[in-house]
Image 1 (cartoon, rainbow, N blue to C red):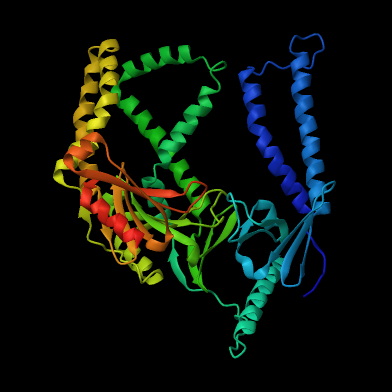
Image 2: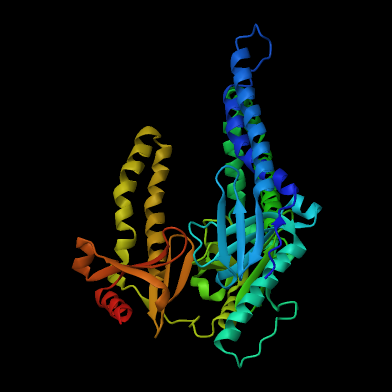
Length: 490
């Protein structure tokens, strides 16, 4: 194995510095806004000292970030030796990391704007031992040919390992071919995804949060008085204005979705799912099938009505989109019937159309009775302080009952030989498929009132993220919970 020392591309110094500076922008902006932009470089001004202090501290942080980027670039090296990827970095404290190629489970690629300008790629090396969502090693910026060399060396190491165990087997490196596509998002899918994902609400709440930071600058009181005059003009103009705001929020949501999920493609290659996506920043996420702990089919009310769903996989490794997150949207938007067919092709041993055992009718009040306890004083306060308009809060009671009935009708479970399926909802309907050997823990609970009705709740947890991901079915038959525990114990 070659012991050629490899370095990161010089642009990695810029990328590291920019990443550090990005984390400083928000606190500095908050300080400037909350201070009401009252800054002055006039030595006689009362704001001179705080201006010099702020910009002096921020300028020093910028210099340190630039120096840190250069130091990381100059000290970070990697090479191949004895079937391992070896990394060394650090200026005063030298650190080394040796990663055997056979332990590497995935190489995730990211191409930001600077990467694409120089034909580079960021490589995240994932192993089964990756903890807290952090990759085992991260190469900030290397050429694509060098990234391919790491992948080729990894393939050769795994081939040699198989040859040693089975000398009669003849294995040759796979010829680079395009892996078959099992899912691709079209522009129509992107628009439907943006419309049904609740992104409009996120955009509106973001705008409200930004405007709230300018409370000392924007004359809200004057604006409200002018708004009162504007409302008197006519409800049609008000409705038109609201419609325009919603259209702008929808367009922004579509743009954000388009940037994040542009050319979203899922391929399968050698027992691995390869996900590529992104417009400004291209990403390639590699997900070994044997690291998938559970699969959730999520249907919000609008998507359930239109026959669409989102498929989310829970992974035990560190290949989530944001590091610590192990929840990967395998199919961000897919027709429910196509979803079942695609999953059956990937995991033929699983039952994707189970007939569920539902919660009994006598358990229905448990889905809305507890909410009355905290909702009653809230409604009482609304009536007292906002009478007579506060009386409208009474409508929450029938809405709460309808939501509870809806949740009760959704709850169910199914036991197969080696599979547990749970279905439940708060608002979105979630169908959680878990392999028996992937379940980390089972937990049951029963309140005093549930005991009187002979019902219990059960929660199953699979490994995903720091705390894991759990599915819960509430208020099912007592003997059904015992049946689930008996199944799990054996």
